[in-house]
Length: 186
Image (cartoon, rainbow, N blue to C red; front, side, top):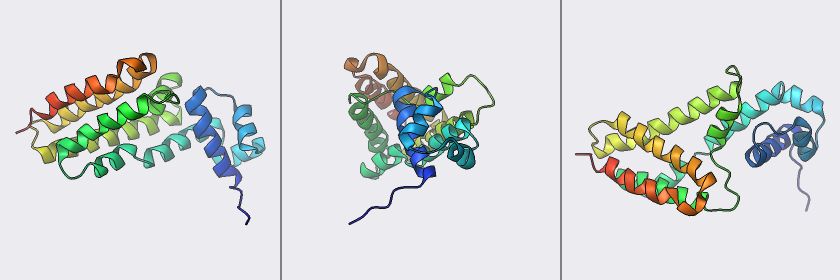
């Protein structure tokens, strides 16, 4: 039984997804090329360079939508769906492989305001805001956009705080605050 090896584009994406999360977006091109086992030419041919590769990694990772999947698994009740996000954050932030939010890390590390990754980060964060605003609207929250901002601040805070103080279980603290945001509905 033989398996087909992924092509250079897929190998570059896989290597960059892993290395940029483990080591940050400033990981060297040579490390990515070595892990992907591709020639430098493939990087430029498929992505135009490392900037394009990093932006594509972020764009594709956003499509995986961990939060949507967790919310869908929690059922139909908007309150339960939002709180399930914090339960999932507790699970992922306490794993040894946790390195923070891929999007926030990239946005902070890339100082060139024209880097294409910034647009991907904004789209991702806007998508999360919309996801939470929709749930708060269904819940009857009096200010779903503000509530979504509050929930997103909590999520971002958990992901940042858990990097430096994972034993503090920031997802549990944020979940308690999220309940206050949710309970202002109707």
